Length: 214
Image (cartoon, rainbow, N blue to C red; front, top):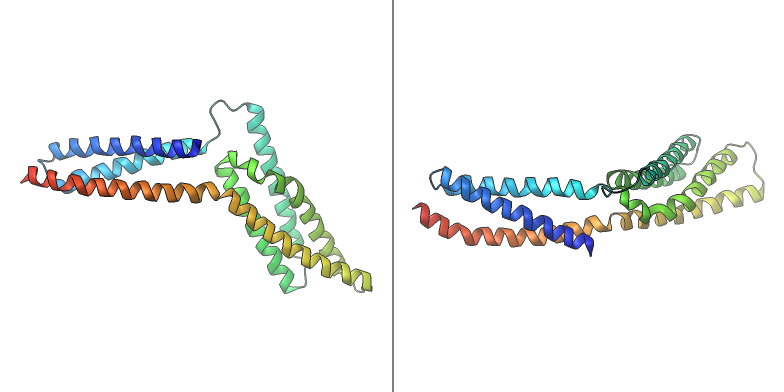
């Protein structure tokens, strides 16, 4: 609900700023239509972009402890990501290389998304605290065992089971990433709807302004 209210408020402010700029430019440019419309649209997008960046930050009243905690969690997640990348180079299986590369990419995108909007940490925290460290340790053990010159039946079975679990883990990471990005998807849909309405209103203003210019 807060996200919806922020989006509506952002578009309300940016739309009104664009209208004001368009009217001022229309008068200053000897009642020419296109310069006023382009200036108004530019002002609207500029104000919207500034407000959007501000909303993506942590709240202004966030404590130093909260900021430090987010940085600490991201630092640990990134350190584990680097360990996973190093372990990948010890693999002999092309299929496992591709699977771990996929997992690495998904988690990297997740970390980057949280770096851009730290409040998303609460969505990904269960995965980053539980499944992610276990996954990295599992891959490291898999890489170590797969390099051995001999394998017992139990070892081969453990490696196959690890490959299966890794596939399930990658699917879980993909679902987690989609959850982290869910607000972006919803925001994009809302903004597209509001922008369509703004364009329709701009088309409605175009005819009166054109007649006045004539």
